[in-house]
Image (cartoon, rainbow, N blue to C red; front, side, top):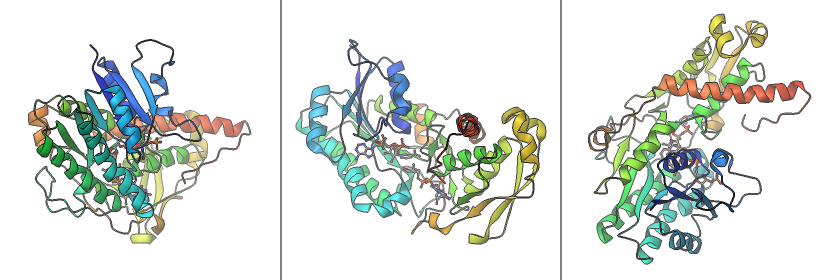
Length: 383
Ligand code: NAP
Ligand code: F7E
């Protein structure tokens, strides 16, 4: 018998990698996707199977975390062995603009899933993974952060996730459910949403290298994050649900880096040097030089001529619109528990993550570049 998994948020970054991982392990994967006016399945299109095929390994259902009747029906129909609750309004800055919706989806959504499993008498069959987050630590009370570090959330997103965390613990303790939290630190990839900082940077650096964009405006350059690769982090989600006992785990690399250094490393990946000057909203970065061999190898011969002329130009500025009303300044995780109990180790270093993201964004942006040359208008929605 194939195991059955249900993934909420299957169209997102982690949902896509997890679906692929579970299908490779022989699972039948059910996924919940929201109705959208456009196709929103780009990240999982390579896994899609025609509904007329028998014994499909991927089956999609329309649904929403704010609709308990819909969630209860899908869980009842699919009778999953494992539920991975990855769906969420996951953007911290946007949660300040949509706090009520964020609480509905990210806090009550978790309750709806747990309660559906209980009411359907699946509490002893269905294991549940809740996508908790390092944002719970917010104004950090300890460095590095581990499972026992007190929480201090700093955004509507983090406060909603705090409810999700505790309701998961409560259902485990009250009803003996196999329900666990993965407290995942930031994880990124070529599939990362375009408005999260790492992807915004790798897209912008690619466009600057190809001569498609002059400058990128950023928010707080001094914030520090512990960044890993999403591919490594979905392995941890799976491992958590394979344990005999449910529990909560920090998943992190243990290395923290400023946004400023992430930008520097992304330019360096293609052989470009930059220098930061000034402070606060006056801070800028200029192009200082090129390693032409590396640039040509990574970006291509045809772009070097134009790029050479740009040395000395400003390529990074600060726009306070990207600042958050309350910020999380420093995150660095201690994943000792995951290492010892799950045997989990990340395979990607930060350099390898940046290499993967830059390679993919350069490829994507080149497609736009050629379309532009052919006379098509390319709208850049993310600047
Ligand atoms: P993501 O790329 O933003 O994906 C979020 C997914 O949730 C998308 O499939 C989205 O659908 C779906 N979704 C949003 N609101 C929904 C709703 N009301 N009902 C049903 N589906 C909804 O996020 P991610 O980076 O993959 O993260 C996965 C989970 O881990 C999230 O819960 C996030 O909060 C949490 N997390 C992420 C990180 C990280 O660094 N990536 C770290 C810790 C925790 P659409 O595609 O239609 O928008
Ligand atoms: O910001 C700073 C910003 O939006 C990281 C989500 O997946 O990880 C993510 O949340 C840092 C912050 O991620 C810009 O102020 C500077 O300090 O990439 P981010 P996040 O807020 O850490 C956690 C673990 C989650 O759970 C969330 O779901 O970068 N920053 N300049 C900027 N951030 C953005 N987005 N854009 C900027 O221009």
